[in-house]
Image (cartoon, rainbow, N blue to C red; front, side, top):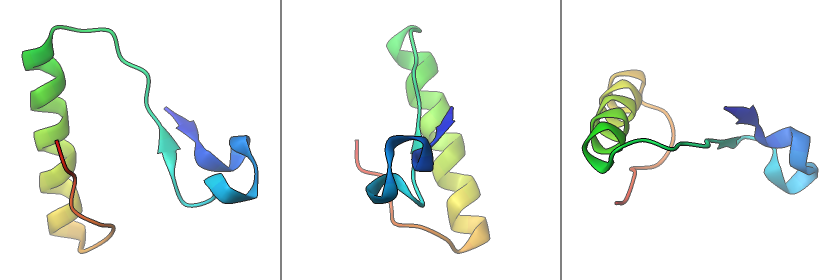
Length: 48
């Protein structure tokens, strides 16, 4: 991942993810990120 701030002021508060995996692995990763966000009470819901 790369902090969004690396892409200028409008990227602040975001991250950039690069991935090259099978779709089911990516789905699992996004599920885990969403669970983490719900526990932390941060951010906006992920849409997939």
